Image (cartoon, rainbow, N blue to C red):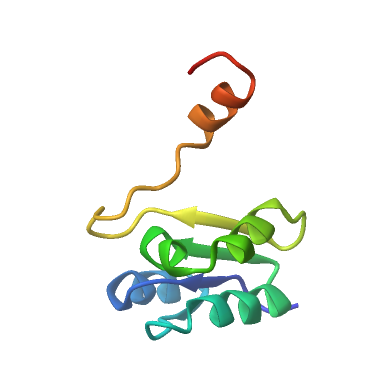
Length: 98
């Protein structure tokens, strides 16, 4: 299996590349295909929040729910796109919050 993959902006990609990840910056419109390709070859896929927001919802949900490879949404460098609050989502699903 190859190295983990980061999908996101060019500046963050440079940092992830220095950390040993394969870093890709998919062009607008190719985000879903880039996520599918990364999932097919990497043990870990990190997706910036901005890229995740442009991936087809069905594919993103399937990727996040799959056991392998592990797919995580990480914050953007500028913080413009919020990362999903999974703890809040779980509390709502458990009926602890409305």
